[in-house]
Each structure stands twice: as C-alpha cells, then as structure tokens.
Amino acid sequence: MPRQFAVAVTLLMMAYTTYAEEDSATSQEPASSAIAIVVHKDLPVDNLSLDDLRSIFLADQQFWPDRTRITLLVRAAQSDERTFILNRIYEMSEAQFRTYWIAKMFRAEVPRGPKIVLSAGMALDLVVAIPGSISFTRADAVTDSVKVVRVDGSLPGDPGYPLK
Image 1: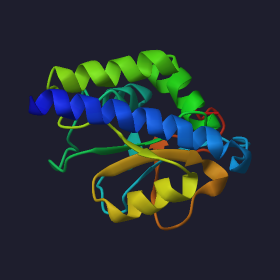
Image 2: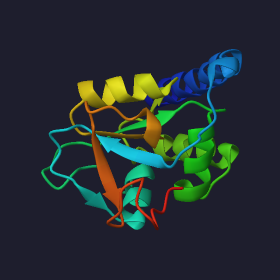
Image 3: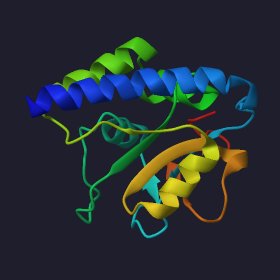
C-alpha cells in the first residue's frame, strides 16, 4: 500500500507541476545559450562524459564517487532547457520520460524521482542548498554559487561543447 501511495503522489505532483508550468509559461525565457551542467560546489566532480551524464540522469548511477547520493534536479515540463535535455541526454519524449520514472519508482529501483524545479533560479538555489545535487540551466544564467561541470572536457563556451 505505501508503494501505491508514493506512485499516486508522484503522479499528482507531475500533473500539478505541468499545470503550474503552463500557467507560468509567459515568464520563461528562450534558451539562448548552451546548457550548463551544474553541481554543488563541494562535489569532487569537474568533468563528466555525455555517457556519464546519461547514466546519472537516468538514475543508473545514484551515487557520486565519494558515496554522496546524487539528487537530480530537473526543470518542469514546458521549459526549453528540459526539452533540450530530454532530446540530448535522455533521448526521450516527455511522455516517455514520465513513464520511465513512474516505472523506475514502481520497481523500487530508486528511492524517489527527480526533484522538479520551476525555474533556473530555483534550480541554482537548490544546487547550492543540497549537497550531491546536479541540475542544468542556460549557461548565461549560471552564478558563481555553483560549480559548472565540464562535459567531455569542455565548458559551455568552448568549441565542440556537446550541449549546445
């Protein structure tokens, strides 16, 4: 019964988040730059391959090398950044993404799904507040309060950066 309750709550949260994001669509800015992968400053992670990112975002890897649990922060549906990450890292549609996480939680492969954040600012604030967290945002929205991780050895402004 507790597992069914958790799945039901997750489904309700996803539905609410989608509704709330649709209401705030006018406040969204288009993703005008590369997408930066950001982590908590204390994490001993400076570079990840695109395959590593996919493993982390799919929750196949749930712990950092220092055994800190990874907390995945994902933008709410309808954001340009989420659409980009769904296409580039997850290689899924929105419907496939939702089904993937519901199934993963139902099979008890993860203790919880990704935390849904409503804005780039909220994502950055939570990365600062939650050790072990990882998220993504437009590179031009990054502040010095978080660490930008290299992807395949490159930063968002570098030639050949894979998340443009």
